[in-house]
Image (cartoon, rainbow, N blue to C red; front, top):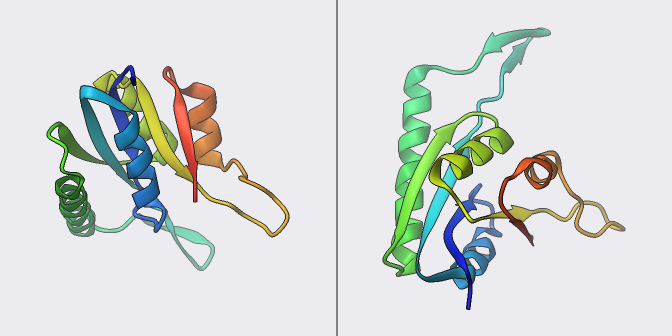
Length: 143
């Protein structure tokens, strides 16, 4: 039986998200809770070699609202009783770590991507930072 009572699931809406959700659902203890998290990352726009900004607050609100709707649909599809959703803005690794600490997560579940023809699962920047800095276990589900 799983001892993970609070499982934070970081989703980027990649095709592998279904697999990440399945792993997280299997690891949460009976009576435990899942929190689905999406991080909206704003990348600066570069125009003629200069940073032009991050986008309008209106665009940010629209992306945030669309992400909440998508997570809520995903949560309903899980059929679990204790699932909540959260959308935050920021750099993915830091935002995931902050959310895990604030919520008191026992486990973080994230997706990892395979890159290159001859490499196995390559640890990317976000996953590597999570593995190094998280205060709880992190499970990386290969894409």
